[in-house]
Image (cartoon, rainbow, N blue to C red):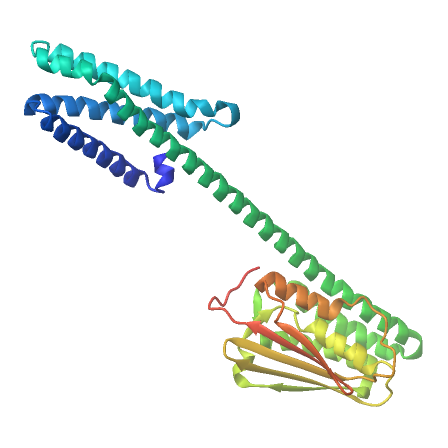
Amino acid sequence: MFARAFSNPSKAKWIIQGAGFLWFLGSFLLLSFYGIEYSTAIADALIFSLGFLGGVFVLDRIFSFYIPKGENNWLLLILPIVLSLIAVFIHKYALIWIFEEDLTYSDFLKNNFYLRWVVLAMAEIFVSLIAIVVSKLEQQEEIQNREMMMNELSKEAELTELRQQLQPHFLFNSLNSINALVISQPQKAREMVLQLSEFLRGTIRKDSSRWVTLEEELSYLYLYLDIEKVRFGHRLEVDFSLSDEAKSLKLPQLLIQPLLENAIKYGLYGVTDEVLIQFSATRKQNYLHISISNPFDPETSAPKGTGFGISSVERRLFLLFGRKDLIETNQQNSTFTVNLKIPQRNDQNLNH
């Protein structure tokens, strides 16, 4: 019990021994004050202290394995009272036997029997109360640790689900595009299948639990854009503006791809002319700032979809950082912009 209370068995041992020494010293000084001879006072204080330490030891053993609850709370009072009574009886008759010729001291022992019992019982009841407090704190800590573990497992499960949704979502869209090209433009459909195969081969091999540099992430985005350019041809143009410092910053794998896919989807819908999507990345303080802008026609109805792009990124960021201010959208005139902030950590091998 005390070992758990002080999180260190050796420290708890020293504290108990210190309490025993103080009990001995207090008893000795009090006996000396009442005129008991030093030799007798030392023997009395020593046996009384051993009785105190013995009661503490027994309570510590009992409450280390069992804490009374509910209707059994009376044990918290009865056990210290009984143990202290036994200790005082042993103390009294042991000293009477040792100092049987000292009638004055024997009378002193008899007259102070109940006082000693009360003092010792109160001390051991205090020990019992410490046992309750320690037990409650342990239970509370255990509950908190269990809740934290459950929250972490839930977060991991949801992150895994989002990762698993990402590739099928992109794959289905690409297959729909291939299907549309099979009859009208079979050569482009074949080219798109090859590009899709290369993209999936690269992303499937990668450990999605590790963060990657922006430069490495862009290599997969270029593969993705090659696939989309087969579909849209000269109409799709993406302008990348990157600072040298931003290229080495890290982010979760495939975090940007749903945003770029969203920009292409809404930027090219209902448009026959060329469309320029702007992608910029800079470092501001301890954040990687990414901005993706696409034009759109405010008078044209948006294409139907699952709404997976921005919402999935927002949810991943919340699960990773517990914040909802890391992504924001801005719609001004005929331009839609997504601004993304990714906090950088000291540990460059981040796992989720």
